[in-house]
Image (cartoon, rainbow, N blue to C red; front, side):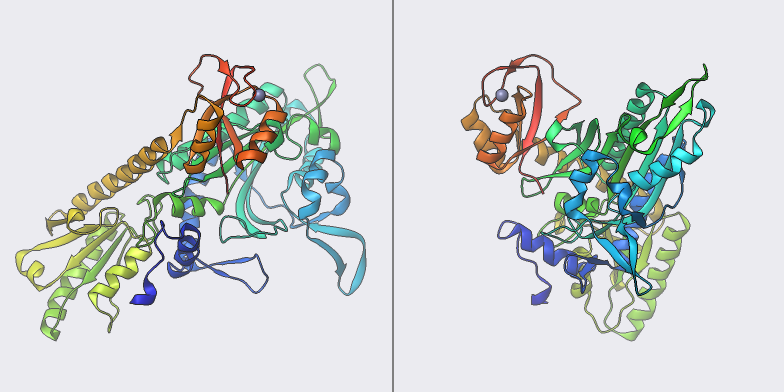
Length: 479
Ligand SMILES: [Zn+2]
C-alpha cells in the first residue's frame, strides 16, 4: 500500500503529477525519449473529450476529414513566419524504401500547409465557401523538455481548418471556436478558463491574431488549454487559395485554424487532483461510478454480489457509466485507494448490513472521508446517483473557480506584480509594447498569457513603464 502513495502536492507538485499519471494508468513513457504511450484509461478519457468537442464542431457545421502525416518540406517553407516558427521543431524523413528521397518529407507539426494545398484545388468560387473541416490526428514537434500530456514529441489533438470569403467571417469563426473551447472547458471539464487574445509575441507562427483559453493549475502556474487563430490571408497567399467573387473577380480566401490537444488532460489533472490522486469531472470520467462489494464469508459474498450486480444494471440502464470491482484477493481498502487514485467521481459501497437494510453507501471522490458519505435506499438509486454526479460536477467547477479567483491578483505597482506571479496570476494594465512584455518576462519569468476578452473597462497605466494603457493583460508563469 505504501508504494501507492503519491508525494503531496505541497511537497513536490511536479513529482506528484508525474507519479499520478503513471499510477492512475493514464499514460506511460515510451522507448523514444519525449514520446508518450496513452494507456486505455487515459485514452477513454480522451475519447470522452473528443466526443464532447466533436458534437459541438458538428453542431456548428464542421465536418471531419483526414490529411496525410507526411508533408513535402517545401510546403513548410512557403509561409515565412510559419517556417521560422516551426523549423527548429521539425522531424524530417530523408530515406524511404531504402532510397534517399529527392525531397525530404516533414512529419506534420500541424497541417495548415498541406490543407492549404488541398483548399487551393477545391475552392474556385464564392459558392464553395466557407469550407469548414476538422481532423482528429497526432502531430510531431521535436520538443526538448517534455512532460507526459503537457509537452510530448508526439501528441494527439484536433485541428480545424476553415476558409472564408471575408475577414469578418474568418474572425467570427475564430471567435466562435474560442467560445466552443470555453464552453467545453467550463461545462464538461469543470475547468474555469480565461478566453483572450494573445500578444504579438505569443501568436501562432503565421497567424494575424491568436486567441486562447488560459487555465490556472493547482501550483499557481498557467496553462494554455486551447487556441484559435485568424490566419488572415497569409496561408491563402502562400498556397494560392483563391475564389471568384460574385462580380467575377479573383480574391484570396481568409483562413482560420484552431486546436485542442491531449494537453487538456494535464489541465484536468492539475486543476482537480488532490494528494490521493486524480479527480475526474463526472461528465468526462470513463467510469462515473465504481461499485465495491464488501464481504467476509462466502454467504455474504453471494448476497452482496447479487445487490452489486443489480445496482450495476439499474445504473447502466439509465445511462450511467458504472463498473463493479469484482477483483478477488484485494481488500476493500485497497480498492477504495485504487479508484481514488483513478479519480472515479462516485463510489458505491455495498456490505451485508446494506443488503439487509436495502440501502447502499455513496462516497464522493471530491469530499474524502465522512463528509462525502451518505446512505441511500437501493430503491430509486439511479436518480439519486445522477443528482449526486451533477452536484460533484458543479462542486468541482466552483472549487476550481474559487481557487483561481483567490490566486488572481490585481497589482497596482510592479512590486505587487512580482509577488502576484509567484503564487498565481496577475491581471494588470499593459501599454501594449513588446519591450515591456519582454522585460517582464526576463525579470519575473511571467509571460503575458492573454488579454482577456472580458475587460472590466477603464483606463490605467502600464504596470511596468507607467505609460497610459487601455487594456489589462493576464500574466503568469506558464507550462
Ligand atoms: Zn509599458
